Length: 464
Image (cartoon, rainbow, N blue to C red; front, side):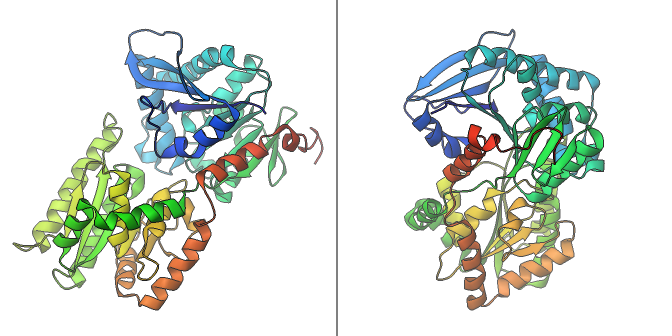
């Protein structure tokens, strides 16, 4: 059985004998441990000079990490990855900040990943590259003679061609990522937007719905929605009823209906728009009848747009509480620090309304976690942005336009007033969409499509 080689921007090296929870680790570690695997990427450290990869073995999985220099971190990570690609991919070009040297460093770091990875590869490895930080890596690997099966998965959305074209350098990066054998996306819309961009700006031809051709090479396109372990998360949420954080929150609410948002502090999450919608909800409801808890853990604090967002949210939260609050009640609780996964699961179970309203999101697993956390006998209601990838699966949620604060406010009020029978019916449809899926199943599906047997079924170049 071929070894799996995962390549990602950051590597989740377990500390001691403890495993890593969440994200890629949950989805892939089980697969890698069964087959034998290697995880390669950035260590998270910023140092003065380049050095060979550091190697760590944990069970059947090897971890190989390299450090970045300060200039590489500034140009590759903060500059081009998060200053250009992240806002472009999420349809927020006004947040882009481009410097030509950042694109050059982004490509240089992708080449350095390839230079350090190639000596560690075996002939029959299956290489799985992850996310927008490494769009240039498949091309760099091919240039270094790597011929093994190579897949790439984009965890974030991909916009329409004209929106993608605003990112300087995107044509070359699309050509580089098309050196993969398989490209995976969260939704059909993301796949089709990428295909149209590849055809319109990068010289590719679309042979069929799921096959592109560039330079005589066929490349498969696939849809692989990221998943959670829903039954496991449901059990965690139910068990939290006895925990101290759950009990403290429940006592503090004193019977008020709880609205809950759980996000990274990020411009793509639609947080200012959400708070404005909540302000309108509070204005039309009885005082002390509801409260909102918004968890917004800081991220990428070195990026100016993120620092400005923190200031904007602090100001908006203060304005809401000063306008509507009472001496013994404030409508909005804003926590700009992370909470444990178990604690959040318990908060989700208490929430009458889960408010998940990103401007744009590749999937948004928080929406699926909120559904899983609910009490089937008395479930809450999910209010979900129609621009989150999860909306394609959770169609019985209340879908909203995150740009329409008044429309969101009306929908949140409808969620608060929804009869029990309708809440149960909507929850059941959402639950059935996620109950039998799993992160490991997601990984298995991608790797099956990357198998030599499946890749052999691709059309011969020049045929349709």
